[in-house]
Length: 188
Image (cartoon, rainbow, N blue to C red; front, side, top):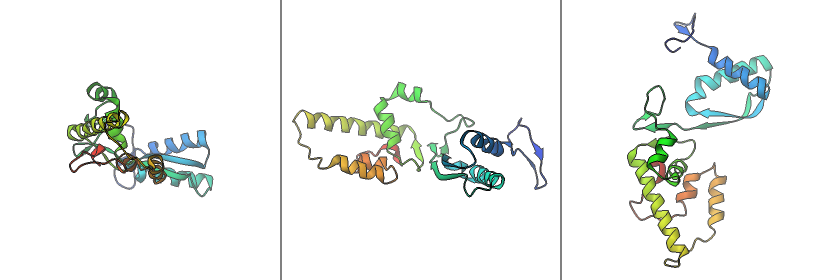
């Protein structure tokens, strides 16, 4: 329990607030039923939260699964800490868009696989901004005839990456020629 939250004494030592797990189990059962296809959240919710939801629903429903597929995303780190409202170390999308073009923010997020930790700090977002400028310059040069680009089966290679666990990082960087030292978006 967090300070100020309701709690109950526990025979296992210490006070607790088990309501969060059962609340989510009740909500999902009310809207999706006792067993459904996809459930997900951040990787920090796997244990104990999702494990508790599974145990509760299986015990009351008699079903084999709560969800057939689980998708867990990585965390967003600021410096070496998880981005968190409680730590007050977060940056809003509005603040980011006030400092960087939307294409930079997209490239930064897509440059890290959805299950990996996204490193966010000024150094990594600036590297994504540099890579955005590089891509835009290459596109301009290729479309104005000042540079010949052989993309081969670009769409096929991008689709192969997406078919491989939504590998957005590979889709962006796997086909892009980068000289040594060229930045990698997301830093992850």
